[in-house]
Image 1 (tube, helix red, strand yellow):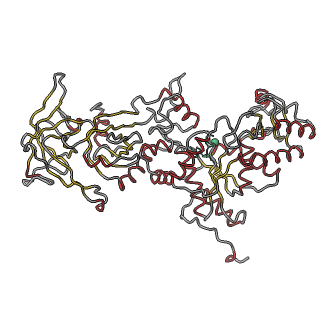
Image 2 (cartoon, helix red, strand yellow; image 1 turned 135 degrees about the horizontal axis):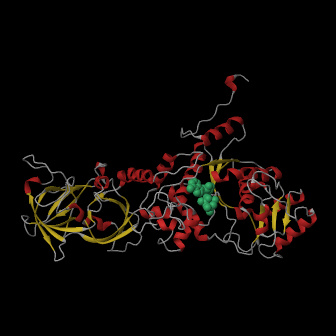
Image 3 (cartoon, rainbow, N blue to C red; image 1 turned 30 degrees about the horizontal axis):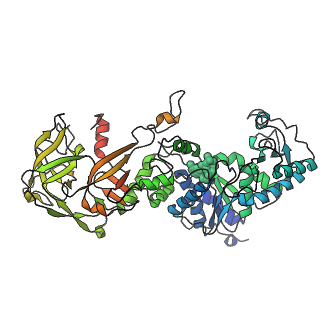
Length: 573
Ligand code: ATP
Ligand code: MG
């Protein structure tokens, strides 16, 4: 073969390069595979989370790069924890994320008969046996990392006896836990996964997909690789904790002499301030520590969707994080960054005052209303402008006024002049307080010469505030969210306490009586995104009813003041 005859390593269509695509390139070059078929294999025992999104983007992304396909396969081997609700939610979430498995929707439970037949093949070959040991006994005999295991007393049953018992397990003759089928591999293997792993267990329980056909169920390792093989998967991409399972994955396939995919492990996504294990997410839901799987504080895709995340932002995040072989924790702010980048382009700007403070313009004519032109999106001139009414009585944010302003606070204060966005310069003349000494109103004057622009005399102001006209605003509920956990590592708990002790009591703040500009009345459906100027990106929540909108804050804009205050250790507003 001359050098020019050598097959070229195909480059992935995306031009991306990482260790997984390197492996795929090699396989296509050396002829191990001539096509790419990946799969996303969720167990339907919970809702998908942002970590799954990474796996979905990776599996679908690699396949797309090589003009291959991706199967959706439910690895539904544990009927006690699985349900149709989870199956449905998983399909909804993958579609929402923007991926299509076309007609390739598979269930490991559809392969139970094949798995049974293959188990019989292994029994006949003397590679599997029925064990009467209890789960505890099996655990005790397994040994440790430093000590070999002990063979089960039932390990040397005859093939005939094993076949008979296995058939009777399937026929339902034995109670749960009384027998298992185990592979006969090597109780002294340094890899504990190879110490006669359990293949099949008895479980008298109906199955959400297979119904009540079965009372024996395959263990994950036994089901997973054989399912990959049956589907002709080429690259079985999974997370690092399965690295030690790869020898078992390959052992089963080698014993059966069937199609062998390549298992490739990558580091799972971990995020600061976030728990990602399905067990914990389930605990949050069941213990009512959140409002459900789709609580906007949850890292589930349904929660993130409700919170206002876009599929584009999540895909961009997955892209940025990339794939690695070492576990690491990604900073949550990277996710927020990707989200802001996307929302900045698409979210129309509106004005809303979340914690209203009344402002009366003493020199503005009573009853007069001016319609001011406001841009819908400064990032996108094609989004046009809208008219926003301006009148004598307005609302501004309480936090935009300080009676006794600290040094770097440039917003409104007694005697100070600021700009009202798209409107006029105003100066605070008088502070009105209630009996409790709280500021309830500011009496201001405006400069008619500054309409929509600068002062003709060139004088400057250091702050621009948003506002709404009191007579034209309407009320809405707005929900503000913070991290669900106070610690960047939720596991960092005091002795004797667990991750729950790090739940953030202030992760949800519900504000009623927020004042919104009239154009927002048009938002009636859930899932509509806007930017409230200076306050962040928001989305209408499904709790919205006609005339009573509810907004979730998706993410704040960059709050420079909060940073300054934090740095100075100045504490609360
Ligand atoms: P369990 O704890 O129930 O095993 P799981 O999170 O591993 O949960 P699966 O339904 O088995 O859930 O996951 C489906 C796929 O998603 C698997 O291939 C798994 O490796 C991958 N996956 C799960 N969590 C993450 C994560 N944090 N980062 C990347 N991929 C993940
Ligand atoms: Mg798993």
